Amino acid sequence: MGIDNEKWQHEENCNVDLKQKAIDDWLPVTASRKAKWWYSAFHNLTAMVGAGVLSLPYAMSNMGWGPGVTILILSWVITLYTLWQMVEMHEMIPGKRLDRYHELGQEAFGEKLGLWIVVPQQVIVEAGTCIVYMVTGGKSLKKIHDTLCPDCRDIKTSYWIIIFASVNFVIAQCPNFNSLSIISMSAAAMSLTYSTIAWAASVKNGVVPNVDYGPRSTATVDKVFNFLSALGDVAFAYAGHNVVLEIQATMPSTREVPSKKPMWKGVIWAYLGVAFCYFPVAIIGYYMFGNSVDDNILITLEKPAWLIAAANLFVVVHVIGGYQVFAMPVFDMIETLMVKKLHFPPSFALRFSVRTIYVALTMFIGICIPFFGSLLGFLGGFAFAPTTYFLPCIIWLKLKKPKKYGLSWTINV
Image (cartoon, rainbow, N blue to C red; front, side, top):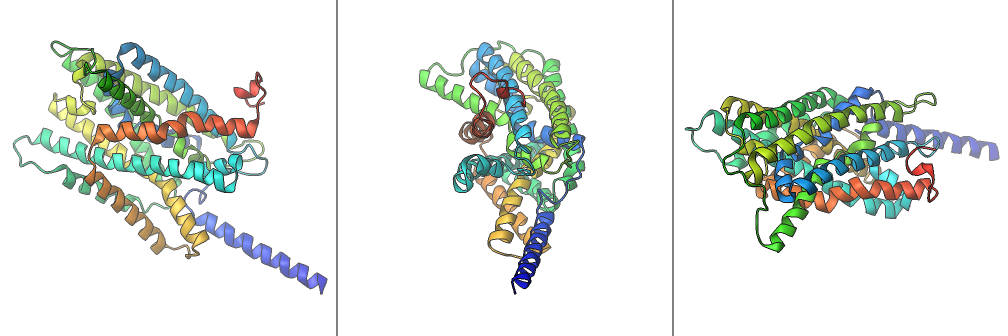
């Protein structure tokens, strides 16, 4: 009887494991672990360089030369370090991969507390970014139309957002990160292209007459508010941390070649791309236009018309890819909840419903709140800064427990 019970228990455990594996093979983050290091480069560059780079000259105008350049450089260095921490912590527990940001939080703070610390902030970041990208995509489409056909009838931004969303309704059905590789590669290439156009066209236009590098407002309250908003813009520009573990989850891992090696190689290339995009756009854009620059530098630029239209088209292609990269972890969260907690069977119908509703919601909110600059500052200060600058360090301290003056603060020992 005891042997029969043990056999039954073993078969039951095997069935549970097989069922769990089938679910993991269906969920978007863990479905495929065959990514290459350049996938990491594309995905991270697409996630990092997005709508935020276009607002950096505006952020500089609210901070001034000294604080602005200092904060840009410090942000690049600090976020690269915290990104390295997250890559290292992915497989910090022997035999276990922490495939999602909230799993890392749960490992550090416990099952319930970790979930509540990470998930609300991560959802705000990822859903908020998708909303901002809806607005950005719609405004860029409108800019293309208005630039190429200035005498045509004006079409409201809301309609352009709907047109942009219609593309995302289709692409959102891609099952996992690796199925987005070509889209992400295209988006990364577009980000490098339109960033180059932004600063090159600024140089071509030259310094505007009577350029002013002083504060936008003389009131102290306004100065403080604008400065804090600029910090939020910069934080928004360094957004890749919220999807980095999910990207690393797609990497194969063995004892000889753990996933952190190809992942980190891709991150380095991505951050070189970030530097190539961010610093010229921010510094040259501010130098040329001063405090008259708009919260999206491509809106400030008017000539040559064909080049500005092309740059905005590249922005549209990029934010389509960026939208999908940031939406994929949200899809994973919702589909995990539906399948594991609510016991819905994994199916195309479930995936189609979840993703269509999500895209529709972000479209609706984007139409209702088309305030591009304000969204960047709010999201950057409220959620991007904690999940990018602070939380990785806190989790590192919790899990690594480095000595006060030990090397494990900076290297993996």
